[in-house]
Amino acid sequence: MKLFLRDHVSFIILYITTMICLPIVIHRLDDFSNHYAYFIFLSIILLAILLLFRYIRRKKMYTHLNGKELGENDLLIHHPQALVEKAYAKQMQLIQSLFISKEDEHKDFLHEQQLMISQTVHQMKTPLSVIQLLIQTNQLKEPNLLLEWQKVKKECDKVNYSLNQLLTYSRSSQLLADLKIEPISLKSIVKEVANDLKDFFIEMEVYPKSTIEENILIYSDRKWLKVVIYQLLSNAVKYGEKKSFVLIRYENGQLWIKNKGEAIPESEINRVFELFYTGTKGRTQGEATGIGLYLVKKILSTLHHPYKLSSAHNETMFMIDFSGSVDGC
Image (tube, rainbow, N blue to C red; front, side, top):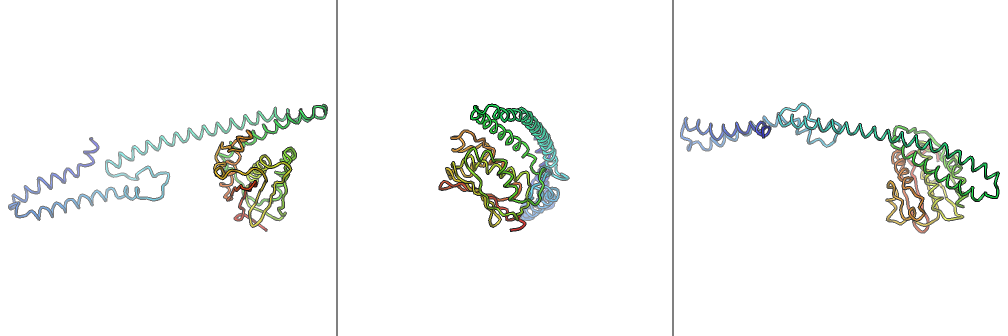
């Protein structure tokens, strides 16, 4: 109430001057009934003067509030003049300080979480590597148990894949700070990923077939683009038909990865990029994490490589558009 009265003191003064003092002065000088039009004229002039005075004092606030682009200091009023402006600016400063402190706490929490995930993954990778080494050794020593050891190796590979995916997801929060754009041979990076997935291709009886030419150079981040292609090829193998091919071709600045297998329902095409969304096929197979395509979307969006997923007639195709970052054809 006190702030309200202090903010409207000018209107109170105008009302007293116009409705009480001015009629008394006019009546003293002459009969008020003969100068009613003059009274209205003076009242309007006084109101105009007051409004002009208030506008001049609050012009910066009106300009600030009408601004279309928002900045980090938009909560504040620079050089507040009126009492209500000063009170508003003080409250906004308190709110901004609270937001900044909460943001700092959140950043610290995310940093600690990232460190914990990274440390845990690395700690788990060490015994996993030992287990994989033991599997290789025992496969040679016990050929009669080869099938059982292969099953164990398959489960270890799943654990290793999930750990790598978790580590990549954790590091993706610092994606912008970790970018290094450079010319990359598209064929070489696809070949590297295919070699990394060689055992998976053989196990699933799905094989890569690339028609990318040697001289295709694109400008991108090698490490993160490799993560994208690894995820897309592993998905193509995982959900592909037995004894089929994953076709990898490049034309008109676009990389296409196509596999044969059960099509993705049209209602799920956009949702498969959501974090932890596994879809119908993922729930059926029970091995999907709902992280892979989310990472693909996040990385490609950061690298400014447009992409498109389409699926129909037992074929699924993923397109990455490098037309804006190609050197050579």
